[in-house]
Length: 391
Image (spheres, rainbow, N blue to C red):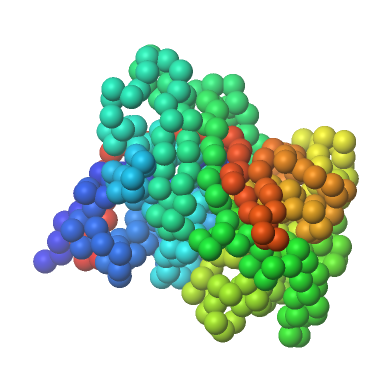
């Protein structure tokens, strides 16, 4: 006789240009409260993966890397932090959950959702104004500070803040990514602002390798035959191009010291990212909006989970801001050089502003914080049901 489905409290949330299923750690079945195969199997089934059809019909995923995400929140275990935030990037067509990095977009939803789940002391929540939530990003061991707007003692979710890539306005959630570089503080894992990346069978490319926000490989768009104005349809339907990007990503990961053999890249899909940069030119976004060259500092197109992203990953935006602040990187060159503590870049859905505070200390570049604003909104709350034999 088949077992009934398991009911698990869950909250479905949009954060930035992503969506994810949020859980409170104690609400998970005991076997899934610890890292391991049971937790991965549960999250795969919740999202509807692996799906050979690529649609995630039998789950809450929406068949894109931006919407196949899971988050586990718990009370803060680190001194001076309110909440622990663990992010899982759930593969769509493979039985795989990548825990190697953060999601910058969903970071905007952590503070509001933590308040919603009762993880923040009610005495700290004002009648109106904002509450500062200090978040421990458990995947990468970093601090994120979210400034969550409050109205009438409740999280304010509606507002007039617009975010390109999101159809409707909402309330602004400013975020600070504190010391976003790698754990050892090395923003440039090779020590170089520009490296030569050799990819057997593909070619040799100039690349800036950055480890801030999320490990990212920056390339000149023109070196790969692109302009930097491409939309998803220009790349995602080209199997040969995607295979070439994956080969570049694997060899970049090896050069960054993230893996020991290129074959390991297949088990690390979420990181590093690959991004194309170019000087500003006018282009038309996926929604038909015209972006003129004088409205932006540069163009960026980034790939996530093997596909061109429809907008921009929040963590990659941190990497963009960081690289722009370091003279001589490909990103800094694309904006015209000089010292930059903030840039506005054009992506497939529009524009985004990101800031970073970088300085050279002892001959090594360090970043104290990166700043950007997103928005977040709870879409649904209740229970997710999962077949009891799925995990």
